[in-house]
Image (cartoon, rainbow, N blue to C red):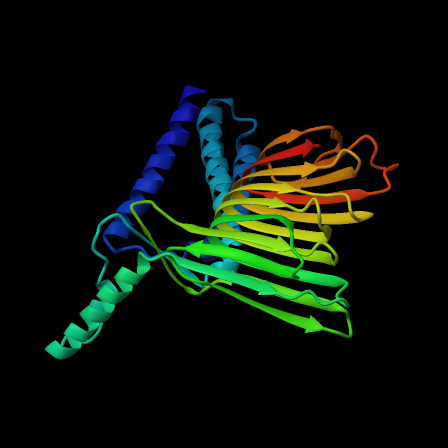
Length: 347
């Protein structure tokens, strides 16, 4: 057993050490986003090793260690791949530049032609300093759209990137949002379809570079919706925290995609059936559901810490509240996570 553990840790140190060294020497350029989806191959190899050495007692220690190493790498690859999927919707829009110094990085600017004259250099430095000063100023925003009497259904899409987001209360408008950011502005728009008696509201962070200095990130949005329409809600949050209270809203479908975040979601009992889809990478998710509502939970993901309040296990990955079949109102949850903590609370 000691030999197996030593082989696992020794193998991990050698593999990661070699990769890091080759990367620092510019001898290795790996596109991990193309390799990580094939992490199950490591499990196949581990199974083949077990089958090949299953009857050889004298090699059991070494083979066990090799299998442990392969499984560990496979689990690590699976977690990273799932987290990348949760970030995928923002990958072409966001560039996080971590900077713990007071001076910004000029590498991108230095890539321009070296033969620019002094006047151009001064203009560029002036523009750079102006942007740096503006980066420190908070950007406040207020967005609202009027509620029309004919609107019966509405869609809300949030692309939050990174920050702190909350939703609660009710507004006479169709939608209201107060935002504050030290990074970039938010963008909002709406579209109305009178034939379908529906509306769609979009709120997203402006495309750009997120510069996180000294570990501080200030980005907040408080959102309110009108409680009259039936809502389909899509939340995309890369990193940060979210506190969403939907108890006063008629939520027909809720979809949540998050990478590294702390999420608290409270559902209501306004409709006969509500569907919730959650996809999380490395996150903590708390889902509050009324006791008057029947709840069914479908879970996919081996590395999930779970706490199911008033939920019975029906089969592998399937949980139900005792009164699910008899309940007039039901909430059906589909949860897919990488390395997550999921808590179901009844209130």
